[in-house]
Image (cartoon, rainbow, N blue to C red; front, top):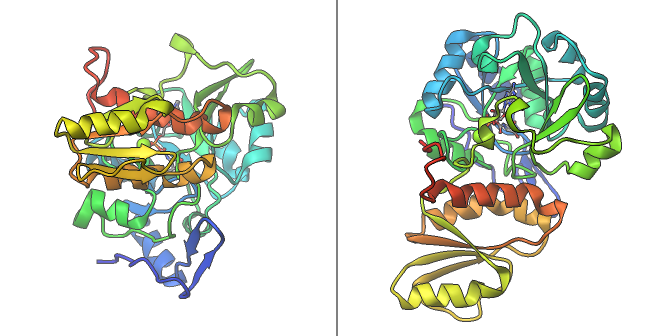
Amino acid sequence: MNWYAVPQAGSGIRSNSMHAIARVTPGQIERAVQALRAGEPVGFPTETVYGLGADAGNPAALRRVFELKGRPSSHPLIVHLASGEQLAHWARAVPASAQRLAARFWPGPLTLVVPRAAHVLPLVTGGQDTVALRVPAHPVAQQLLAAFGGGLAAPSANRHGRVSPTSAAHVHAEFGEQLRIVLDGGAATLGVESTIVACLEDRVLLLRPGLITRSALQQVVGELVTNAGAEAPRAPGGLRAHYAPRTPVSIVPAGDIDARAAHEAAAGVRVGVLAQQPARARAPQIRWIDAGADAERYAHDLYAHLRTLDASGAELLLVQEVPAGERWDAVRDRLWRAAAAHAAAPALEASH
Ligand code: TXA
Ligand code: MG
């Protein structure tokens, strides 16, 4: 099995205060490219989360991705490209807004939804007339895409409806031996999925908030439409039931987190707490994580923390409500979806 173990610090890891990027050898890239050419999906790092990549021009490879994920084949995939120069190959028309956003934010955590070129497979687009494109900045993704040459359709490398993976170990935990190759690029540097924007002829829609904020987008393209409603292209990531841990999640007003945790523990409930402050009291039934008050750090650690709490044996996850403000938009969006996934609302699509 070509499972690349997480390298130890000091052995080829470049790190700064927050993240470590593991180097992948040319031989590993070459083996991954061979697998992709043979129609086999490959796990790879991006700066947002890990992706499950497959040749976007190979229907059998794409079907394997849907199968592995357990994802309905009507859900469209993002095509990852080595550079913005490939935009015109995948888009039938490139609206001026898309040109400007690509020039400003690629490579980076932004996905652009544009009218698709005729050759783009319906398995990629979910049968829609648009295609989602992104040029990731992670050096390992860049190397893989440059060596592969074509587009890699890649959803997040998790089973459908589950928390996205931010490390190679997470990907392995999702798919085990069913996924032979996972390139290990260290912990994903950002930690939540890309901002998705649809560029239509006359307007720009924000489909999924990410770490590129609304105001950063507006500085480039002017007004954005948010609650696009029925006219919006389908973005199943927009379904409330996505991004969910197995354990039910409840969002608790910031000032109530200690009291609520104590209350549940007193009632004999084992609780996992994702807070932004240290615990005031300890109890054996409480597993408390202080994720801190910094939005970027919080996003970086969010999915790893949810996995840790999920695995802790907790029966209920309490999440301290995050502050207002657009720096928290992406995190707030994912947390509300995680909470909604377990709520008994008939409008929800079941997560698999
Ligand atoms: O950061 C990311 O975007 C990660 C990394 C791996 O690049 N990828 C990711 O992929 O989050 P996925 O499949 O988990 O989420 C992609 C979202 C889905 O909600 C999908 O419906 C939406 O993009 N999407 C794809 N094509 C679309 C289209 N043509 N129109 C509207 N939404 C689209
Ligand atoms: Mg996903």
